[in-house]
Image 1 (tube, one colour):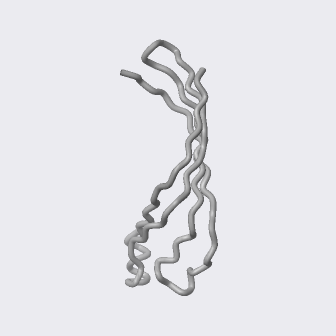
Image 2 (spheres, one colour; image 1 turned 45 degrees about the horizontal axis):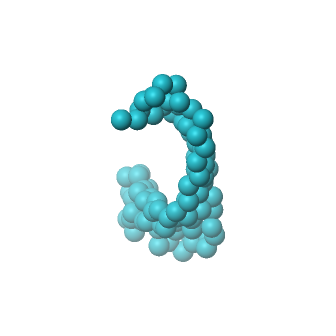
Image 3 (tube, one colour; image 1 turned 120 degrees about the horizontal axis):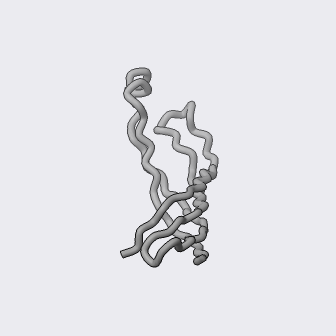
Length: 89
């Protein structure tokens, strides 16, 4: 069992669907900076294979797509828990 922590910066790209673009042609792709944090545990099954359980959180400003009606000027949080397999080589 090997615990770990993570922290850093990233970017989220918000890409509206074609339906949203048809309703308002001014809507376009928008990128927001994000603070990323989290941690998890790696469980080794063999020397090269195991299971990972992780939690990742992202804190970022809500996208507004340059539309006054969507401008909330707020910061939000996205939680991403996950479980998966890993292969070490």
